[in-house]
Image (cartoon, rainbow, N blue to C red; front, side, top):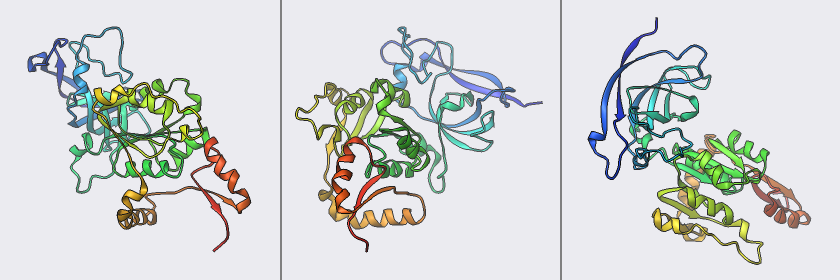
Length: 328
């Protein structure tokens, strides 16, 4: 017989207008069975840390006929929800087992039964790091464009080393597979198969993007600006979609930089040459330990140089395109 225990919940009493008040919510005590229902693929969580985020205020408004794709829309009389760190108590999903520590979307209650799709990641690195960090500093949402290229593949892996949720875009199914199966990205998508980039980004970032590593520009940047979170950051490394155009594409959503207080800044390698020894120390140690992998696409012979170079702009390369002129 499965154990039945108390389950305190924070419930929204009434939809909110203006500034929220404590009285808009109440503590309700109920019970929950510590067992996933037979045949269910859901996961039963014991919630450890819950993240208090400004976006939650928007979910307290009375619905106007639309819902967020995250499934977090609050209803009067039900528990509110958000991001949290939890421990798996029982699981109907083969991806999770008892004792796993996870970070993702949960309810504001002692125990929650959630779809496994709401779990964003397992928490692997807890030694010396408070679990509460995973509700904030170690839980950022990062998007990388041109993610399978020379720079993008490393950016995504660096972000994963700090336990960010990372999604990358690339130009083929094989490249997307590379992102997820070789580089460890949480998700990836083929931008050529997405007629609506804005919708695609909302699908992978229902609560918005914290950091966008810019490699592409143009329509991708335009869609990203609509999906950035308040005070998000955009380090701009390149804009490959624009290099071959006689008339650069305009970006129509720049006002979001003001509205959302987004910081966008370009940078050049030469500005940080003094840090290269530190970079080498960092990267080499992780490469030797297998924590970072690097994929190269090597063309041999100078005669193949032009084709290799031009291939970059059609996305023909897999990983860092290298031209081998002569053996060592």
